[in-house]
Image 1 (cartoon, one colour):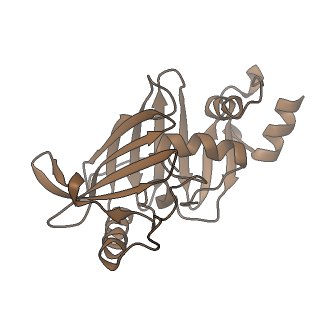
Image 2 (cartoon, helix red, strand yellow; image 1 turned 180 degrees about the vertical axis):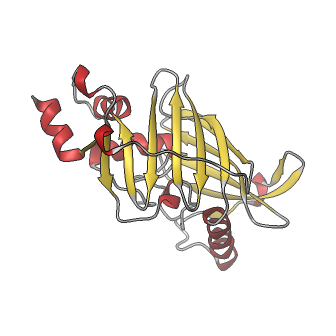
Length: 231
């Protein structure tokens, strides 16, 4: 789900964590040395992103945030997105109408990954830090415009033939497996970031999902959180 420049910009510190969780964010792979993707690649990216944006789904898999973490993602075009992370780092991410809600535990992990030795006060343990991205929540799972067709990676996911799209730079590589027939839905994503690998499988397309966002009492703007952590 992370992650996820491709789309989601929270703050410099928060974006780093969201990127490895959902394979989107401020560090998406750069265009290849050959220039912009060819027309076939660009058209497939656009069609896949539109199909995923308008279709509810569920996804699960590992993450590149740590070697022993998993994630579960739920998306509904009307209700938004939720991501639950479990493992060495536990927490949740929600997104609705371009506003992100990042649990304090994930925010703490993000800050520590960026080299800041901080501890979240106990009173903020259940808080969700809010940020406005100015972009749609589908940015968390959108295939980047820089992705290019990679026929050598074509294969099958649960018996469905797939077309592969790859986006990479020196430190990251994402391979997106899109259904070759019917709706061009994203069926699987394989990511590598700084030596860590993860695989996310997408399914339950069109399922009825229920996403409950944090209440106003559970949320805190980023600026207020930063002041509280700074003491």
